Length: 477
Ligand code: ADP
Image (cartoon, rainbow, N blue to C red; front, side):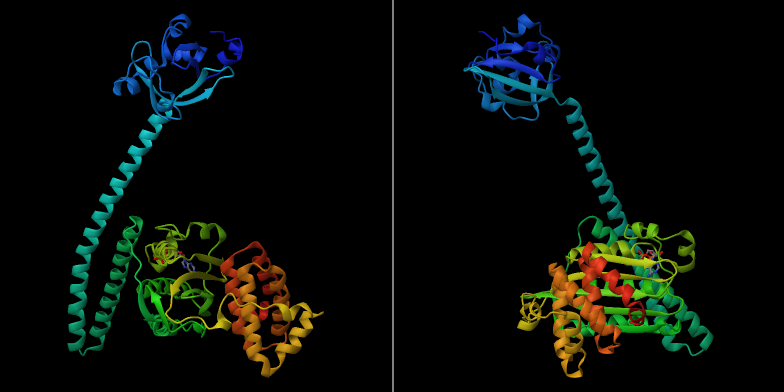
């Protein structure tokens, strides 16, 4: 058969194997790479049929060796190609119709190295998973074994506390209880982390009272806050439905972790907690939380590592404050399981703000005014000077309710990426705050939350701009 259409010099230069064959599988040509790989002389190869090269496929099927069914070879990434001496190698094979009718070109690449690498990687992955499984089994056993004696000590100490009158002894018993609680917290963290790592963690869907939950979270930390003489501010968005459906225990765990860190790392100044509703569509509610402190802060380099497991800023901090460095890694994973994310903004020496969002459900439907879909911008389009119009309109006492609505729209526009409108409203807000309107502080906070939450360049720029303009007042919030 004439192969004048084939430029053998070019084809011989290719590193891939090239075999030209006819309808019946008779080989008409093999390039240099094919000859070398298959270990045939040029004349010998053209005596062969493709079924000899792919003998595993064809002999297995028990078909006659001179019928070559192309479709059984085409597109296979790991098919065995046989050498003259009957040894074989895995190949990635493609077949194209040749320039002349009745002929086909097969392109093949030896994937031995790739296959070995994949095999090795699979082995390593399996080994890793096995190690992880063993480690987690060990962790589960050890933590379980540790829990029992700690609970035993706690039980006895509590009984003693009820009986002992001596003040000195009571103080000692209190310290023992405190140490036991710390130990329980560490054991629980290790157990949670190990479960999260193996994907064995499930998020509950149960109804709970959001406001009661927040009260309990705050109450857990007030004693320590008073002891350290810190100021505490709590701002909870009253638009958050009372009854929510989700994992209360885990939400409490996240908040407790952030709040205990905020208190732990703040020697003087304040700690604030903000909870806001940033979205409600149908029965889905998105909440956004901020835990802000004026404590020791975290440098940018240190911030990068913080959400990894066992990460603490430095060893001296561990000695001074204790902890395992697991809290934030767990927090991040729990938040992600609740379809949200965590952000940190911090400056060394000035304080930190941890914020996160979570998605929950509610049985209560959003009323129309609160629904995300409700954004009516028509009234802004015919105002020449929005800033002035804003001050006049919202600065008046009787228009507070109206102001709230506008702020809601600002939050929505930020979330929806309607930047022109958001900027227009942001300037109104800025002007109002500069006028010293205390009532809108809360609303500004809400906007700050929305801006942080969407974490978009444009919103960040707007936030920086607002922050600079309102630095004094925002500092008071
Ligand atoms: P730990 O149990 O050690 O507190 P975390 O994962 O909760 O573990 O925190 C890891 C580290 O992050 C802490 O050891 C501390 O160095 C730093 N960190 C966390 N929160 C704050 C904060 N509010 N202010 C300053 N540093 C913090």
